[in-house]
Length: 76
Image 1: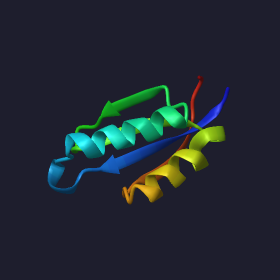
Image 2: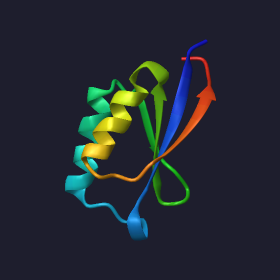
Image 3: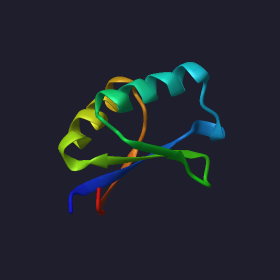
């Protein structure tokens, strides 16, 4: 069982521009994020393996994207 973190990216006003979404998805690809979904509260949810979580969050910080990190434990 690998540990992972759930990264929640809340959209300001529930809206994200296509360009900003593309940049977040490129960052996710660089961090080997396998699963991204949209939440019910106008947010993007990314399940990130713990080994790549620091990379993903640092890329989000460079993009000035606000996020919340919640540790989880799930089979990968």
